[in-house]
Amino acid sequence: MYYAAQDLIEYLMNSVGGGAQDTEHRLLRAALHHAYRDVVNVRDWNFHASTGTLTTGGGGSGNGVTSFTLPENVKNIDALIPPMSYPTVTTYVTPSEWQRINIMLPTLNAPIYWTVMKDPSLPDRWQIRMAGAPPDVEFNYIFRRRPAPLRYFGYETEARQPGFAVAGAVRRYGTVTQFPEGISGLHPYTAQEIIGTTGSLVGTPPENAKTVVSDYVDASDSMFTAILSGAEVWLARMNGKNVEGAMTIYNKDLRMAFEADSVVPISGQRTGGARLSSARALGYYSPSGADTGV
Image (tube, rainbow, N blue to C red; front, side, top):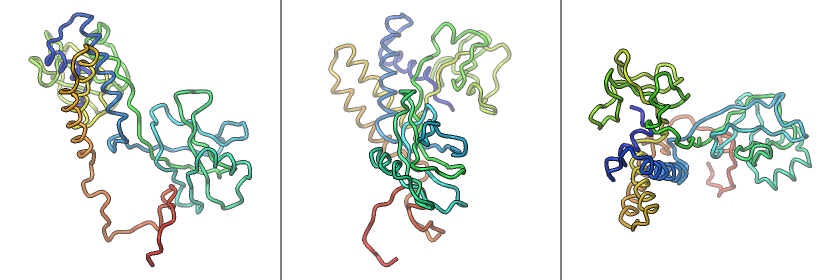
């Protein structure tokens, strides 16, 4: 099952009695936009953990600084990991430390010192900057992705036209006579897919079925519930109503989402399996600790 923006706006229409009037939809859309932004940014969700690669050979900005612009959806970086065949480790430093180290030009086999700074030419993008002249190898990095804002909710005129497509959005199929609604609607969708993703079709759409396109909601089950509660808070706030009751429910749903933000319940538990020698080998800085004799 794919969560879509259509599910969000249908929930608000059902809960507050909203209709198809443009003024009502403007308010509901604004509440959902703000709630979605708040929930996806309230913490570094494990659900949003992703990986990427960059190659130092031929890269960089060409201005004497070895920098690499990160993809648009990068929210923050956890680690920069060198290939196992490369013996030098990587160490994160602050931007000011990176500036001093880069001027001194680290010696051969010194750690790869790196930091993250805003891209000066693209205000909404980040850069990884490495000190000195890193080797011509491929690095992996672990990051949290930042979902794109919601734009199509499935009730726009173009979103219900045959053939309309937005890469990464959800297309839902109804029947020959009915547009599809969410799974709890009177006319639930018969099939759905992620546009542009091969093999994502779930269900069997009838021939000549009516379709609806709405943005994909990049959230887990528990996060989705928190988005609904957050939208009620923003709706009450924009209507000038008391938000205390809605805020209480929202905070409860957020706490439940925090507790459920794990896909590996045994994560963090050490077993008798193989272990890397140190945190530095994983690509991030590990502060000095007490000598335990191990």
